[in-house]
Amino acid sequence: MTHFISRCCCYAILLLFSVTSISQPDTIVIGFGGYEGVSITASGNSEDSNPENSINQDGYLPNLNAAARFLSQASLGYSYTDTETVTLMGIEDWITDQMENKPMPFTLKEKVTEYRQFVRDSLDNQEASSSSRMWDYAWWQYHMTSDDALRQKTAHALSEIIVVSEKSPFGNNGLALSDYYDILLNNAFGNFRDILQDVTYHAAMGVYLTYLNNPKTDTIINQYPDENYARELMQLFTIGLYELNNDGTRVLDNEGEPIPTYDNDDILEFSKIFTGLTWADRTQWGRGAYRDTSYLPEMVMWNDYHEPGVKNLLNGFQVPDRDPVDGDADISDALDNLFDHPNIGPFISTLLIQRMVTSNPSAAYIDRVATAFNDNGQGVRGDMKAVVRAILLDPVAKACASGDDPQFGKLREPFLRYIQINKAFNATTTSGDFRNDMDYIYQFIEQKPLASPSVFNFYQMDYQPLGPVNDADLFAPEFQITNSQTISGWIDGLYRFIVGENLADEYDLYSGEPNENYADEITTIDLTTEMTMTNDDELHILVDRLNLLLAQGRLTQPTVEKIITAITNFENEDEDDMELRVKLTIYLVMSSPEYLINR
Image 1 (cartoon, rainbow, N blue to C red):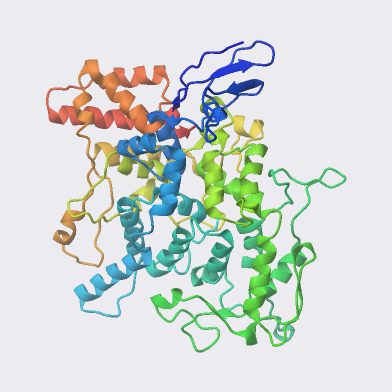
Image 2 (cartoon, rainbow, N blue to C red; image 1 turned 180 degrees about the vertical axis):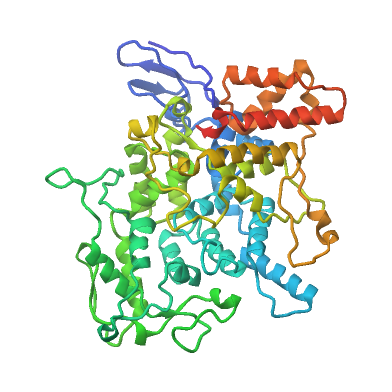
């Protein structure tokens, strides 16, 4: 039986070919990635041709809807021009270009240092320290002006897995926060083992999880190593609570019960590993930070304060009794022990899939990504490039049919909705420099970078809100901060950002700074194109454009009709009226459930 090819809702077909069923006649929709029971032949004989690519979608260039859908997974926000770029390049080439040709243009630490020097010079005080506002401004400046969209998305995902927070003793130290985030940006396409190394030795993590100045055991004074980092490193950053198969399902014992990955004895043994680390710029043990720059160099090991002796770690691995004591070697062994654990691939892969694509990845999806984590095809474990590619290029992530699966997709993170406003409508300033301390954003939605209330992030991977999600034994992490305050906060904030034209929070870098210093750093958005579509008979074009740009074409017809009906109640006599119509249309689209659930 021969089937004709219909255009997929998400991809444009480039090749002509024929398919013949070898099973019983059935209805087959070509272009959604499914082709079981179908033989495929091509008219060409080129060695490079693969007709299956035309069925599994690898042979298609995405159309604008598919490009927008992909960018919602692969970036923190995007513009109409970005969707056109992906449409022309194709998804795989875009990923390659991002990984190979988009280096970090500057570091957040450099930007904070620049702000700090500006304050020092302005106040004629060369002792002035960095501040959390400098960190916020640096983060926003980077993400509004840099074109490494995939690096940004990956680093943001990592920041919600390997957590430090400004809700901590160093919360007002912009250098500490920026330098820590630079680790995630620098290593977004590096190796996960290097990330573990760098965060373990970073003083921000040492203070946050209380193992900086962590001394060895002294039973005489009832002193024992702090267990905080040992516990969270295993539970949250590497292997999780229960032994996993490569597909993320739990390994069960003979009674059908899950098997813990570690116990209290293991925590105790790992806690001995993370002793003896202190500030690099201190000459005495047990002191506090010397200055704001104390957080920049890696912590150093004082072996006199490091726990000596054998440490019995996971899966029978034993750190030897080194003589002389070598704390750095012990840490390296312990991180290798966790990095080599069979859980790390499926555990980290699941977390990254949840942050980028869907809250409830199938076992098969997790297995494919974990396999890439275990081996990038060249014998390298933990290659982040391979992992990110596997997540974004997986058939489940790309398939049009996934969007109709009620278990696929995720609630858009509130903060990413806010970024999308800025990206979609080309937020600019007259100088090209941005200020945004994101204070109101946090008040409205309780989320901004490195500001989670605890090491458990803003939400946990296995959160189940009461109701249909819990009844179906599914997960919806982002719903953990979805409550009456943040729901109304998003609606109120959206009105402030769009209709009220108060998009960012621009404030003084030091008390009494003249407003004219940053008059050219006030953010505005560009609605020029959309304002050409505000006549009653063209509102459907405006809604279609915003539907594609913001909701990847997911708005249902009833929602479209309600939006158009609502907007026609507003006048359209002059430019102010036209602009208000556009703003209210954006407001309604970004308030809709089809937008809020990203599929």
